[in-house]
Image 1 (tube, rainbow, N blue to C red):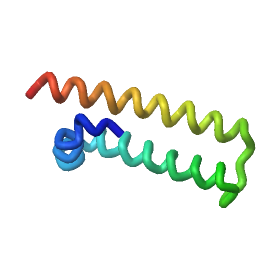
Image 2: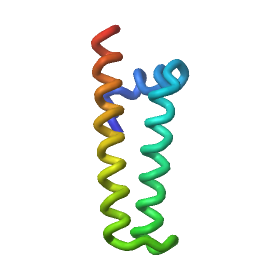
Image 3: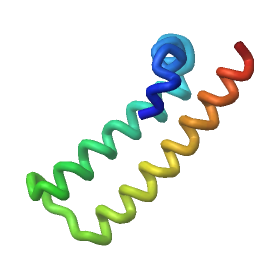
Image 4: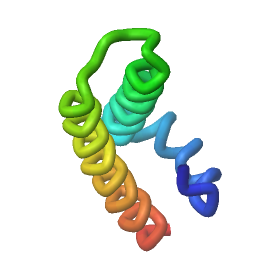
Length: 73
């Protein structure tokens, strides 16, 4: 996710708790969705869709934080 911001992501993960929270939640949802789609854990298509929308919203928030941080540098 966001390879063009790899260095900035590394920096923010050590200095911005809000970013860390968003990043970790995004990764948690990603794994949960993958597990549901692979039928490792139960989940309806509707539940998966809700999780995907939440994950996308988090990705948008992460991108906003990254753009602001990049502009401040």
